[in-house]
Length: 90
Length: 454
Image 1 (cartoon, rainbow over the protein chains, first blue to last red):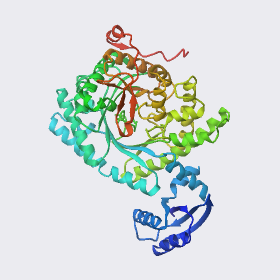
Image 2 (cartoon, one colour):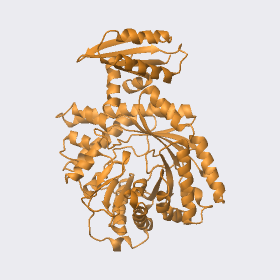
Image 3 (spheres, helix red, strand yellow):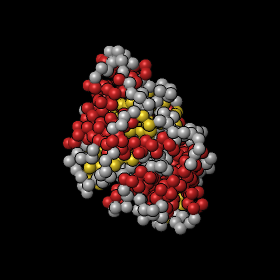
Image 4 (cartoon, rainbow over the protein chains, first blue to last red):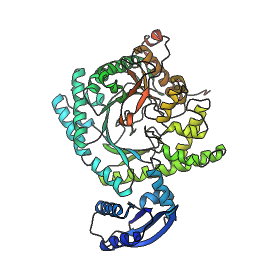
């Protein structure tokens, strides 16, 4: 299964996770794992998701998450998992 | 499973430390385009490259988007034009028209450079080689994206001094032909000793005759990532220093390997090599000279620079080799002057001279790169500098190169601005003593002995 990593970084505020998760649910994207920390007042979240059931193109999802990030005031990045696997696993 | 810290580290390298894939270069063989009719030759070349590369830029952009890694350049390298154009081109103008075809197709498919307007003359020159070399000033002044290279020597054949002398004149003439743009043509012209067949980096990329019909070669970068990693081990001993460089080079190269494999799969073109070179850009924090400073030098060029560069180059290779299934190209640290803010600063501070740069090229990849010199430098002096650099490559069994820019109308103390990735450079002084009698001898320097190494 090809997995995707979604990262959300920005100033902490109410409802960041809710809004991102709502968008993912609406697009049939299943969340496999979430981890989250606050570093120096900044919200850091990483989700591992499964995008196999969504009908949208990867680029469109990335664009829409970008727009959603602008609305909430955070930066949302959407990247295929392989780049992290390649770099950190032998 | 990947954790949040690993993800954050990767993204920090990309966003803050300028980690990127410098180039995906598609190599295309033009050997099957050979024709005795110039019109047909040009048409075949256009068609072959267009068919091979029409999806290159789109595919590169898609990969970039999906993995979140910038892929700065998408480029093409082709079979050395002197080999392809020989039967059809009867004059320098004929050859220059082939260069215009290469430029047209580069514009059409959207790549920013196309390399392979080249001749391989390490032992001797054919008529076609001579015509191509003669046509370089015209070709580079009438095209925008074509890059030219000439291989003048090798460890196996020695140095073709006739060609070295000729290239001294050609570089000066190219500078003259493009003097309205600060002699920019010379930034797209490089001469080599031991030129590799699979180099993805410009201006020296060409598709060697030993390569398959099409191939994907990828050049990674990441001086900023290495510098940041070294910042965390400041004051530690050489063992820690070297381990840190190796680990970072491994990570950087893995990204290149991933991109190369993806591009290969999506374009249906075999994967050739990953080039491990640390390639700087004029952007702040993307400098090889800054790494040397982080290792412990006040400026690049200070005593200790050659040793620091030697260890950097070696550790990058040691880390990178394990990260990629095939390594090739130039693979080392690049030390261009105009493309590296730290090098520019070192020259401006008086810490770095042409002679020190020459010493540095003994231990790192490539050679005297993107160095602006006074426009009134004699052709024989340029040929002498080239001969010195070729000798270093020949004797040490390594690739060396020279990309000098004699800036017409400007002298020492002035600055020249090329723009974009090519950057800007202070004009450096050249040793003013003559080597005319040496350069004018003619003939070849024989290949060196391969035993009795001292």
